[in-house]
Structures are given as structure tokens and as C-alpha cells.
Image (cartoon, rainbow, N blue to C red; front, side, top):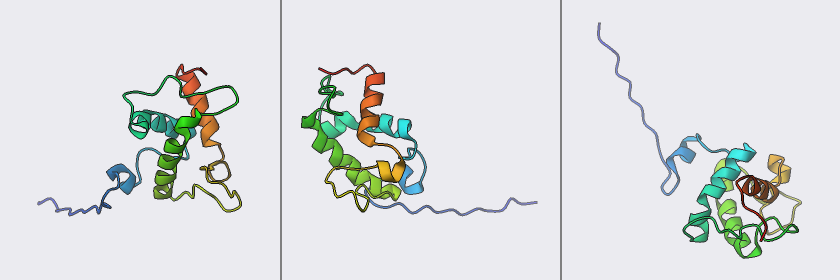
Length: 122
């Protein structure tokens, strides 16, 4: 008896991470895992060697203002690949708003995870 041959092909989108293209791995719907993923990418996003110590500016802000735009641009660029609109209708904001779509505020969640990792306000 001969084994049957299985032919399989997977098409990837140029410039897209293979895991994301296959729909596996990190999901924005898992709040803690997604925030830890974003934090692991912070050195790349910010062009630094490591996550800056002053990433949390003060008790009144989620993330230090000088890093906000770079982080926002990155999150804004990856959410559509998961089928999530970073600016849901009715929010009318330039900043990524995930609360209506995902049920959590990405900025508050990032700050919480950073604090759990030992980062403190300056």
C-alpha cells in the first residue's frame, strides 16, 4: 500500500509577516499578549537599543508624549492586517482607539503592562 501524496501551498503577501499572513500568533483581541508584543517591538519602533526608562511620563499620561506618535503610527499600521479599524466610526480622533472595537484602551493597557514590567513614572 502506497501513501498518498499531499500537495499544499500557502500564499504570502509581500511585506507581511508570515504568521500574520496565516492568521496565527499574536492577536490584538488578547489584551495582555498584544501589549507585550507591542512592548517587545518598542526598540524597533522608537529606534532605540532598549525600551526607554522614561517611557511612562507621569501619572497623568499613558505614555511619554515624545514616543506617542511613533507608537501610534506602528499600531495604526498593523491593526488593519487583523481586520481591525484603528479609528472606528464615531471616534473622530487621530489617535488609535481600540476600546470600541476590542473592548480595551490600548494606551491604558500598554501603560499597565509597562508598570507590571517595572517601568515607573519619571
